[in-house]
Length: 190
Image 1 (cartoon, rainbow, N blue to C red):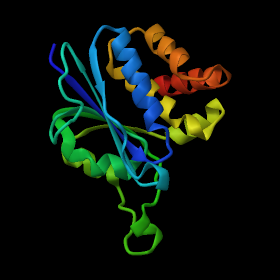
Image 2 (cartoon, rainbow, N blue to C red; image 1 turned 90 degrees about the vertical axis):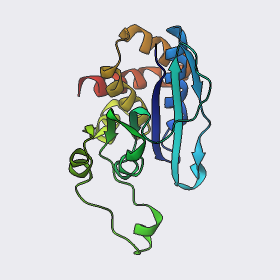
Image 3 (cartoon, rainbow, N blue to C red; image 1 turned 120 degrees about the vertical axis):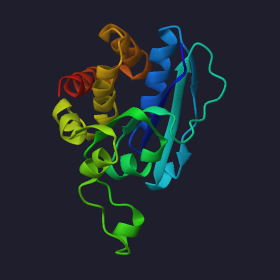
Image 4 (cartoon, helix red, strand yellow; image 1 turned 45 degrees about the horizontal axis):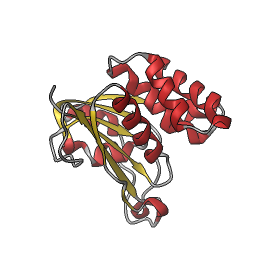
């Protein structure tokens, strides 16, 4: 099996580390060799953050180069656009439509770009965009955006739903498990 590449991108503090650990656990339980990179970026200060998850028969490096990502999972719309060059020509973007102003927008030096989903599609990307924040809030917490995204991503994998739930049980503290299971289902069924 060829190595598959997933990039998880967003803004610091959105839960990308839990999402990457969940995917790593899920894929290892399915018998794949998995490499998960550390989070890169200003995760403590609301800056851009990226995590790489690579899996296959034998994975040598955790790094994904431009044009190699099978999937880009994005917690924030501008981050999806920022990392678009890393997507394979037939790759898939799964993104939240949430918009978090980066520092240049906050300071007034720039404006948040408009019509990003349309622009990414015009560039040839397959884009699955949904309001993950609203779904997370419906599940019971705005902090569950990461699990809503994992539920949405599950559409693109031929893995049993029980495997996803088993990984949720392994990675999420028991007191938050039911909330996260609801978030997963809302993302999956959106």
